Structure formats: structure tokens, C-alpha cells
Length: 200
Image (tube, rainbow, N blue to C red):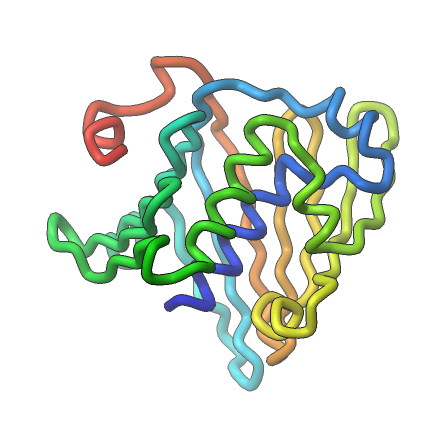
């Protein structure tokens, strides 16, 4: 579970931070709303298995508060990432809690997430080698972890989009591959539901 959280958190952060190749151009294309919510569809291909694992749900990114990742199908699960902790919920029950004061990686993960919201690309450039391109209003970026431990946990990440990230692909060192597709993006106060706002 920790590995999946790390992979998602870094990938999500890269989604807005992807810059080092044509940093200025990509930053200019990316919208930076204070609140952004939408749908995700995730497909995970496990090495050695023919049938992929599919899931979908909703996500919200709220500046100054955190990230909410709600899997709705096939099994409900909610992941909340804030500056000080990562919490996994099964229904209303807390299934797992990682606090920054006990787990140093939590602060690193979340500082990366918040750096994307503020447009601070410096930290990501220290963590990843970045290769990207811009074609009109569309960009593509590939990230490769600089540190062997991070590379082993995450593998390689590629993403593409325009004003918002559309696709994230994670290729793990184990041979597992994950594709996350974002859609139905909404911004502003009306983007988040009351239930979601209560969780953040």
C-alpha cells in the first residue's frame, strides 16, 4: 500500500510540475486553479497476468488543504493526502494513517504535491530527470527518478495534457504498468461535493 501511495503521489505531483524540459512553456499551458476535481479511470497491468485490474472514481486537489483520491469501483476506498499525513479510509473507518512526524517520506510526498500547486518546480528537478516536448497547446513529459531507491519504487513516469493533465503512465521496475486517465475536470467552489469537502 505504501508503494502505491508513493507512486500515485509522485505521479500526481508530476502532473503539474513536469517542467524541466520546456519548463516555461509547460507552466504557461497548465491551469493552476485553487480547486480542481474530476474523474479518474485507472488500469493496472500486472506482470504475469493477462487481465488488467480496472478501477475508477473521483479526485480533488485543493490548494492549501490537500488531495482526495476516492476509488468508487470496484471497491470504495478513499485516500486523503495533507501536509502532515496520508490517511486511507474504508467507508468511514480509518484503515491506515501515515504521519509526517513518524514517516519522513510523507512530508516529502506532500511537499512535492504542494510544490506543483504553487508552480515550484525546483524540488521535482532534484528528484527526476525530465524530458518533454510541447506542440501547440499539448505537451508530453517523461520522468525518470534520479535516486535508485525512488526508481525502484516508482519506475518511469510519462504524462501528457494541455491545460490539465490527461494521462499518466507509470512503468514499475517489477514490470507492472499503470495508466490513469483524467476526465470531467471542474474547477472552482462548485467542483467539490459536500462529502468531499468534509473529508478535506
